[in-house]
Length: 114
Length: 114
Image (cartoon, rainbow over all chains, first blue to last red):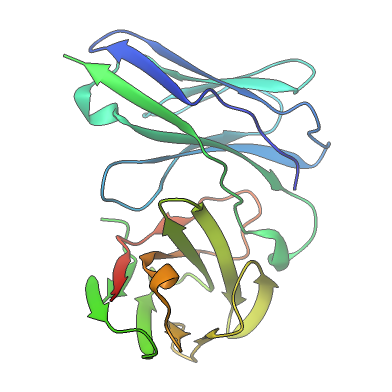
């Protein structure tokens, strides 16, 4: 599995935007970029994913560099509930049903200050 | 609520014992994944089943085994338990092997081995 590199931790203030970076210089053409987050004492939760183009959903935006070697998860207005560990994961989109697993790294611990 | 149900939520047992963790996937999801999360190892992929068949194997010990039943629920069996097996065990499900779609995680089963 191609690896990702994320900062260990980041801090933000409530109601401010947060940009969480991820480097994935060895990404292959069939790798999708997925973001999950894990709130304290809960299972991981899907946030967003993309392949080449920027993506938006109700939770966040995903900005993907033109060369796809990096991406940024954008939380437009952080809330206290967004304090979590954020994982950037590459997932092979090629092949059949045997490639659905996610390989988690250490992630970025996001602290949100009131 | 992700729709994935895991039981038991908490389990305390002794070294050398055997336990079974159960996972009911979201309705209609054919693929089940098991993950182990310990403080020093992070989220580790153990094994994946798709419609009753094993599809991918990760860092699963030989003392551990899993299966997916015809009704699609899955069980993770942990035997000859050691102190180091104490961890959170998460189950996740997805529609297919879902190379691009999201995984839905349960709230986990916390295993404590004394």
